[in-house]
Image 1 (spheres, rainbow, N blue to C red):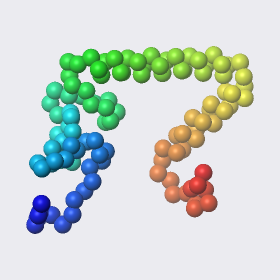
Image 2: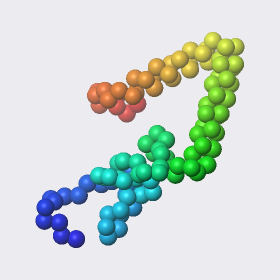
Image 3: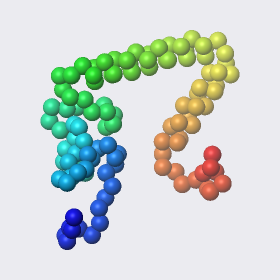
Length: 113
């Protein structure tokens, strides 16, 4: 296609958001500019997973995720309460995860870590 009003095209992020094709259609459950909005009759979980309203797929997936999270939390609390070293390691991982969430500009030598 020749688009005289546009100098360049932007990549759709994530790629599955845009189905592409001749009319630049959006993927399932998406609509709007850059397919970034949720289509009517759909809902999303974490801006990644799109489910049709009234369907059972989203409810089942969300229920399994909640159940797995609760089991993991209970398991870690039971095990870590018996071992101080494991408790410290879990705390270290939590703090490291929080620090990693910020867009910090590390020195080149530390960016490899």
